[in-house]
Length: 353
Image (cartoon, rainbow, N blue to C red; front, side):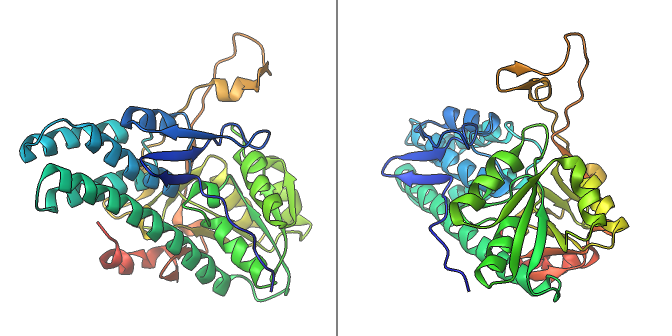
């Protein structure tokens, strides 16, 4: 068993404000941003200072409280009307990550259900945001342990491949896909992590490798187009990725490049797991064709740092996510256990709303 160091916390409540790790500056610089206004939280989510579906949900919950704190009325009805507008602002930041919408809905439900003065409702919202954060941390630890149960039994020491960053930086501090990897490392079952670089924003290269280095987890970075070669060589025993939204049938949206990785894994008979909390499952969507796919600024493609890497005049297509069909997924790892995609609906009654 391996002793683990303290984990990162991308979202921290401190006295009267939120402290975010600025993930756009990693790994060259570890710095934080202080957020005291809802508008600033919305901008931080939109510009990916904070990113990763569960972490966005936690940040949005605090954003709802910050917005509630800014509402200057003692009238309950007017307060709730303005709070709905705060929710609309935060919803507009990132269209794909369903945890964002889930957290906002939960905060609004809390506000509408709270009895007492506006000041009391505001305090209740802060406590709910803290609860959402604490629940996510425990949920991710549960996902890590449940995922450990379904990893291949042999070899004893596994090499796992992951894509993008579904680690502590993307959650309340432990991770979903990287949570499974952390649990495997803790129990002595992990030999090495292979991290896809994850073009175009390079979250795998910048963030996943950074987290692994912080904790002494052996990690090897590969370009996205090297995965097939590595699998053909027998270097990968399983793939574990996160998700930003999962439809009721098990189709899963994750960072662009995940779909092709799933196809490659299927071709090489390598198990392909999606690790995500129940809050990431959108039971209102029957399949992945209904998941909205965010398209981002083309600067992410044509520029690395301050260097332009292609000629002026090129056109761009920059979808941030793709959808992996359920039939390519070996199992979906949740805090309640791992199921085949077709069996997800059994968890619907457990999902907090």
